[in-house]
Image 1 (cartoon, rainbow, N blue to C red):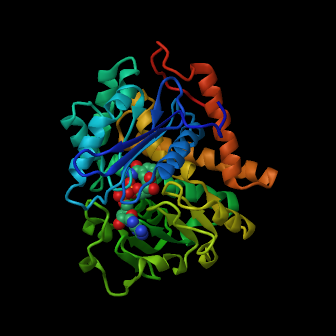
Image 2: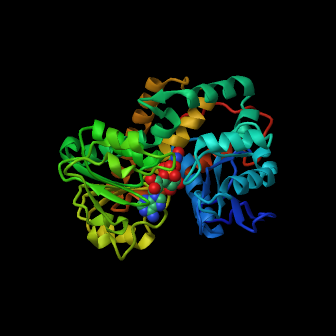
Amino acid sequence: MGSESEPRLRVIWTDPVTGRKGYAVIDRMVNGLAGGGTRMRSGVTLDEVERLARTMSYKNGAFNLPGGGAKGGVDIDPHDPEARGVLSRYVRAMRPLYRNGWGTAEDLGVSQELLNEVFAEQGVGMTVQAMLDRSGDPQAAGRRVSQGLAIKVDGIGLADCIGGYGVAEAAAAAAEHKGWDISKLRAVVQGFGSMGGASARYLARLGAKVVGVVDVNGAVTNPHGLDVERLLKSRSTLGEIDRSALQSGDREQPRERWLEIDADIIVPAAVADAITADNAAAIRGRMVVEAANIPTTEEAQSRLFERGVVDIPDYVANGGANAWWWWTLLGVIEPDADQSFKQVSKVMRETVKGILELADTRHITPRAAANQLSMENLDRLAGRLGEDASATPLEPVRA
Ligand SMILES: NC(=O)c1ccc[n+]([C@@H]2O[C@H](COP(=O)([O-])OP(=O)(O)OC[C@H]3O[C@@H](n4cnc5c(N)ncnc54)[C@H](O)[C@@H]3O)[C@@H](O)[C@H]2O)c1
């Protein structure tokens, strides 16, 4: 099955109580499994969910993880008082998919805690139950995942910071490839939730100066560098910054103008299509590290490439979070923060280096190079393990 084929399954659901829509797409399966988060966003469409499911296939391929890609989307604002009820009914309706191969996790507008609660309520087990059931030892695998999810790193859950840590490591690998010193670079991050907050934290820990962060309510900037940890402490569960935590020297500006913030590293970590052909011209930085899924339109990617801006594709840069789930579940790593960070750092740096080297050699975009490497990996895995479930339990697959 090639990368451009039709998705395996598209589902459109209508909530019987509110009439809201929900979508699920399974792009492809490997060994009877597909993985991908569940998001809540007013205006989410089947097309968006389908593109995201395809991205998840690439993401698994990039890191040699033995599953295809899937995605869920519920069309409601997460602030809406009806949101929890709609999500719960959506999960109930999707039960057959979760039971038969779709493993999911938090995504835009849905925290892992909320998803865990709703899954328990609907008797589906864990959000990655499909993978657990195939693991050969569901109890041990489930224990590792639960222990991993319980770990906190400086006040934030490991599952909520490992993805952003990977984004920072991807930026560091790209800087190294280019011969730039990351500690001399300035970063701006759009989105201050799980991905954006942790990307900002770990970029700052690598020595980069975080000169702007953006949430749904606007941008907060400081050319001398923001106190990221202070802003993280003020953050709501939906990733919104309490403006009373701002310090002298911090400034606010409308969120739409975030690309005008003068920075070297641009991290879109919120919504889809944030960087378009229209606003890409405002970018003065040297690299875009895509923490969100599909944040840069194809036309914008071409413009950035023409201008020599390094663009690390979404499913590579943000793939640390997904890989961490698989590695923990499969026992490649123990539920331990140090081991998790070391593994993500090692694999992310190798992967980004390999992609940028191939892109340089062939004079193609990093995304084109990543697409090629990723699909080769996934096709190889599907060839070895089959597309549909086999009786063989899951086992760690290494590159
Ligand atoms: N959470 C994960 O594990 C994970 C992993 C890989 C990729 N992603 C992707 O990262 C992106 C963010 O996911 P998340 O889990 O961090 O979400 P989240 O809900 O935790 O945070 C979203 C953040 O974006 C902000 N935001 C929302 N709309 C905005 C807008 N129009 N302009 C500026 N800021 C806006 C919110 O205020 C919040 O700070 C999504 O594309 C998601 O698919 C998430």
